[in-house]
Image (cartoon, rainbow, N blue to C red; front, side, top):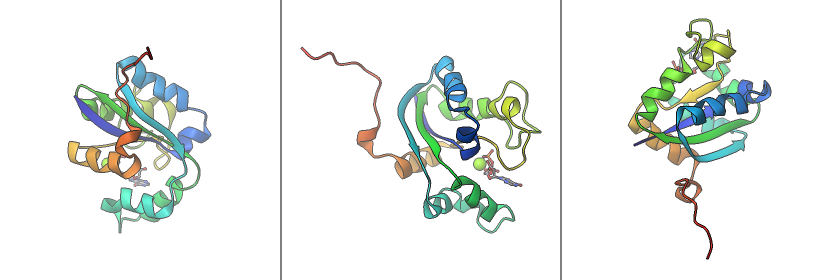
Length: 145
Ligand code: IDP
Ligand code: MG
């Protein structure tokens, strides 16, 4: 069972696509271990996208990611990282296949709705970046006696 960190980016939140996107993951069978609406500050965005530092789009990406609230999620399921990346589609909406989140809901080459971890190592670091262990739930129900 794998875990992955998802960010519904500011464009997804602003366009009212939170429910639509999360519904796809729930219907696919993923369990939501954690969920939070928050605004990312610049230093967290810089850390999250450190691998892109120096690229021409980097400052625009930081500006975009901090421009409004985001929804952070931890999803769990079989092969979660690969399956979520497939469901997200290619990086830019105009290239992403229909049927994928980016392919169905966007055309932009910068506002692309969603982030998903790209490896187990990245997932662990990213989950710890945004959530404490006590914020992760296993989905089980305990009925009080
Ligand atoms: P990914 O999100 O599909 O893994 P990456 O290449 O890792 O794509 O890029 C991270 C994020 O940086 C993208 O999701 C997108 O928001 C932004 N980005 C990547 N390339 C460009 C670009 O050429 N112009 C503008 N933004 C970009
Ligand atoms: Mg990437």
